Image 1 (cartoon, rainbow over the protein chains, first blue to last red):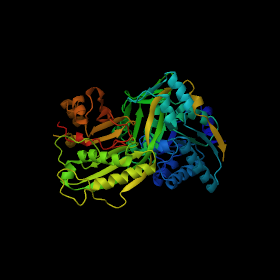
Image 2: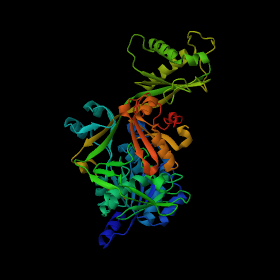
Image 3: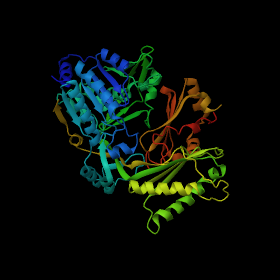
Image 4: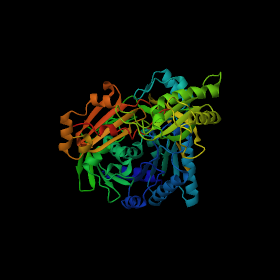
Length: 465
Length: 100
């Protein structure tokens, strides 16, 4: 019998639900899972091991390009650790947002690693996977039907935006995961998914309250980040019908009422609400109570179902190829006139590389030391040194490189008004100072799509390894 | 007294690619209440420090974690060309010297 089959059967035969133990092994699979805490978690005989593997915070490159943010070897090491443990103890392993961005190439790379590990370790199990991609025709249909809304002021989605996206994913939720759990499986790898669904689906299927299950999931998907000191060690949640108890599996990390409550602030714009495809959790009545120095008991989350169901969709568009120049300056006159110089030199470069044709590239520059990170506040003195990151996005890598090489040379010797230093305006840390850094993308879809057919969006495949 | 002298945490981070959030957390209920009562963290102040309009500033009181959450729109979507802070993790420091 499969790992999910076994636990569903056990609970269906119990007169009263026993508490469910869930192990949050990693909030970022592929960056390392500390072994001592993970092993300590396994000794507590968890009913499920869950790992989140992705996020939108890493920017549009990974979704756009299909590349993983984590290195292949470190990802494989983490996957091996959780697969070996889950199979040894015969408990379900659930991984969400495979391969950093959760689109088809990310899922494929993750599955390839899973199959490779299974072969090398002689593991045999039922592997389920759920692609997170949303077909373009479905998104276009929803756009035409007026069932797509921009999030946080994103412009209205157009059919052209949909066509322009290299990949479009939707954050699947519990309904997709539920279909996988019902299919008698041992391991589930999901494409782009709500981080909560990894941990909330099984308890909800077993009859635990949805509000508590989702609230718990939202906390443990970040492993021990909700503790003081926060960290990436595994965390154990024990859930019953009235609440759940949190305990880090690293002895130095304490889950306190304040630290757990504070976790609701992290990367959320409203600490009182967790939005899900099928509804939302309200935390206004949530209670956080210390059981002892290291464990906190949480209760009070309320589930409010929504209709129709909605999913967040994300898409990234290829903009061109990026090249940059890395250089510094320590001349106070150059630093003072930086904006004017860059505007003037941009014209010089354009006349050289475009001649009579249209400008086919875009330039961006950042002055580190001045305002490379945040807007400059009035009255801030200028620094003694400044680092310049000059960037070009052009249709081809060769074109971006050409523009940056020309820029570098002419900026080096640009004769701005008042210049004393005729030897050169820039300090290069090494040569060549111009670097091609690959394709550039932007998020062109960050929207909510209404869907009556959530279940059809994320088809399930089960494979016997 | 400045906010940096009384706060336990002053941090920033994206909440999605279109929103920057600022979290201010305190060691005690007294410190939290003191800053709340001072009225120093207002939409006017945030709008002025971050160059956004007041209507776009959202301030949420979260006493159960002795914290204040501020949400403001990003001027550039995370990772768009010209963005300077993809994760939004370095937008907090201009709150350090808010007078309480």
